Structure formats: C-alpha cells, structure tokens
Length: 446
Image 1: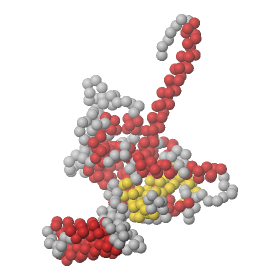
Image 2 (image 1 turned 90 degrees about the vertical axis):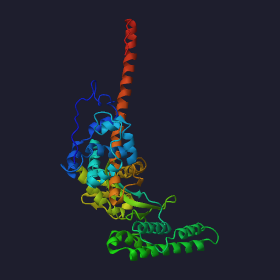
Image 3 (image 1 turned 90 degrees about the horizontal axis):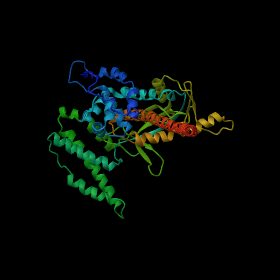
Image 4 (image 1 turned 30 degrees about the vertical axis):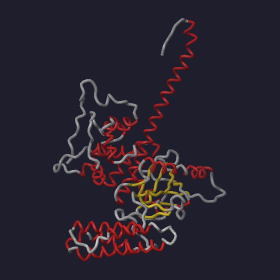
C-alpha cells in the first residue's frame, strides 16, 4: 500500500531542516534538480492502494539506490550511513533529521525487483536529463566491456564438490537416508588434489578428480530414486542443472560456470594478468565531446561487438529522443557500417581521411577511462545482484550514478570558480583605489 504524503510545513520553531543545510552542497543541489514526481507517478502502479501495510516512500527508495551508486556502497552500508548523514536524509525528502535507519537493507532488493529494468531505466533517463545539452549530442563513442559476476573462478572440481554438498543438504532437508555422505572421502580426495603440481602427484590428483565426479553423479542418481514424485517436482530444475554440469565437456557451448549463477558466460580477455572473465557483456555509449553516458545496455549472450550496436542505439533513441548521426567505435566492431541512418565509424587505413574524422577517432579513446570509472567507482567491476535481471539493473544504476556525479562535480567547479573570481576582483579594486584613498586620507575595508 502507498504511504501517506509527508507534510512539508515548517516543523521547527526557529528554522526548517532545509534552512540548516549548506545550499551550495552538491547533494543539496542535486536533490532540488531531480524531478521526483515522475518516479511517484511511474512506480505507484506497483503498489496496492488499499491492501497491505504502508510502504516506504518511493522517493526514499529511489534516493537510496542513487546514493548507493554515487558513494560506491553496499545495501547495508547505505542504509547505515543514511542515519548519520543529514544531506542523505534531505536528498531522500526528509523534513527533519532522523537518527534511525530508514529501512532494512533487504527492502532495496524488493524495490529493485518491484520496479524492474524499466523502472531503473527511468532513473538513468533522469540522469541524462540532469546534464542538459551536454547529453543531447548526435555524435557518440561506443565500446563494450565485461561486467564480472560475483562468483569464484570456476573449475570442474569446485562444481562437483558443491553438487555433493547440495545433494547432502537436500537429503537432510527431506529426511532421506543416503547410502553414504562421502564427507571424509571427499576430504581425503581433496588432499590428494593438492599434489597436482608436485613430482608424481599429478596422476593421483587426476584420479581423485574423477572419483569426486563419480561421487557427485552417484548422489544425484540416488536422489532421483529416493525422492517422492511430489517432492521431486520442486527439485527437478536443480537436479537437471547438476546433471548438465556432470555431463558437460571442455569444448561444449553454453557451459555452466556457477551453480547459483547458471547464466554466467565466459569471455576471453587475451591479457596476461586476466585471461578470462566471467559475467555478461555491456555496451556503453557516451557523447563525443562531453562524456555523458547516454547508453548502458547489458547483453545476455556472448555475441560479436558488431551485433551489440543496434540495440544500444535503440536504447539511446528511446531515452533521449535523439537519433545519432555518427558512432565512433574500435576495430572490434568490424563487419557493420550502418545501423539505420547512423554511420558506424571504424578506424581503418585511409589516405583521404578528413581532419574531423581523425579527431573523432582520437576522441573515441576517452570512453576507456569512462568504463574504468564505472567499474572502480560505481560498482560495475563486480556485480552482486542476482541473475540476468540483476546484470541489467546494475549497469543502468552504475551509468546513472556516474552521470549524477558528473553534474555534482560541475556545480563544485562552478562554485569554486565564482569564489576565486570575486576574491581576485576585490583585490584588483583594493589595489586600484588604495592610492586615491591614501591621498584623501580615507580607509575603506572590504
């Protein structure tokens, strides 16, 4: 159920909560620049007007998502810091300081699932609007990157051992008596696997690995035999996943790399320090001259870069209402020259290249640090959100956070510039008038 509207009348006897804050603070300015009403209108349809307990205000939940990306915090940390920061609370629409947490951290999970990818895209759209004309360019730069999932480095042995543990847990939960739990056996086999890189130990390690796989398959088949038909239906998806892991081979496509994130893909990076990355592909579009992120799309499949540009441009046009004229990309996009009326500029040997096109290709390199900041400062380096839906949501929130932060930095620079400008102006006036004031035996202080 929707919450009751907050009364914004003066609550203090002498001053309001808003008057006690620094009006030049970047979060204060951002709070007044964002159109919060559109979120109330768009997300109110996800709540029942009559049934259920009153929900948290929509502005509060949206602001917590934005603050999380701005400050690179987890759900738990942003909820904890909200109770300590008056600017966080004003940004969330509070009219007085509150000393307690606004909600449980898990409520952010429910809110993200409630509004879905379309709701998060609306937040991203607002971050583009905040940047004004800087986000309305028709000349873009594009690139792809990998958003890694929060999983351990996958190996067959790890997956087989996890299958064994999960099968034993299912049997205990359903009060089934297994022929053997294999707890001590797996422990001894794991000790033998540590000898893989020692002299003469590789043979024992490979034999131990095959034994662990045999035990995992034996437990899966035993569960199939002993689970009742009614209970087997609830575990059918899980057991089928176990069977796919046990049957997959090295050269197979669409392999399973994680039991709790089966949709993760493997991408060959080709660099010495990190040869492979496990996650999802991301397509990023930024304006050529200003660096505003105007496209952030998660690609579910492991596709060629040339096949990602069309849906990325469609998202850009949907969010901004502008059709791009040119998109400058790297040679990974070879094989495509036009997407509709948009020209895809790929660097290639050309003796007759114009100065404008050469400048555009050089400017395209500016997207690399943008992707680096998205990963290191705005939570795109490792995605902790669940499933394919979580991949898309995390990308959009990271891009929105960076766009909001760009505008906050712009306000800080503007405030610093005007402060320095007026201080120098006063110094010039003082130095110009001081001889005349001395002659007149006058003294004026500024």
